[in-house]
Image 1 (cartoon, each protein chain N blue to C red):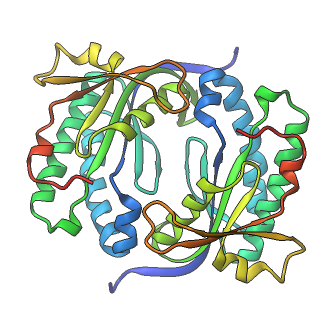
Image 2 (spheres, rainbow over the protein chains, first blue to last red; image 1 turned 45 degrees about the vertical axis):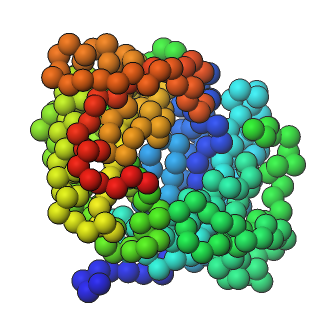
Length: 182
Length: 182
């Protein structure tokens, strides 16, 4: 275990709801929507001092020094994405799921590895379209520091993760703005 | 649709079988195994004139000018990975699934997007550990050009993909070498 650099960091994982289906329907339109949405997300991550360390297809994964900043970032860009969706026809709407976790991960050059990263991705996968799913560890750090209400989703048994993880979601206005649910 | 650059290319998608579970068990050992395996895969892709255009966590996605080269590449590195696994204890063994597809995809800088990419990833997901799953389009191109036997898996309804895709696999010696199946 010596010689391995590790750090405690906050991981944010996001990807598009129904991306393959959207691509099947309309490749160029879906790519255009993805690029617009990624511009919103990427600038939000930069504003909140996050750093993107992975991106493939419709997925993006970033780290933040502060869980408060990570959740603020996700809440901000989800609201902006929901506003964007209001102006577009159904087939151009694009929603993201977001998962946020804290973990002591392995630093490998610019990349991060470890269960902490995988848990963020698994939380994202079980999250609501347009919403955010936090681990209990993130919730404990942010609950008194943000002007958000939270809903406890209970202990989640995540694929490939040994211990159950508490899933907690901010009550997100994004889902109340008429964007589609898959 | 004007102004969009497209090309017909061969996409290879690969990722680790049970990566989250392995990370949960042993983060540093799993990362070490991943780096060794990726060295094998990446040098195989380079040797066969492929180009990696996406990588996140345990996944890698590459394009090849030639489907024959793509399948040869996958067959070569799967054999090398199986040989590597013979020398390691069970918990250090690492297997990859591989999917290969041909598609007319959108070129966006160094990145590629489109159903052709998504189909490769979906074929990978349904493939055998240590094996390769080709689309019917790839099979048609390579069947008389490679000294491999193939098994027709029939029409596959892939998640988010409208039309069924024929899944065809080379009879791969990797699975016969005592590597574990999940």
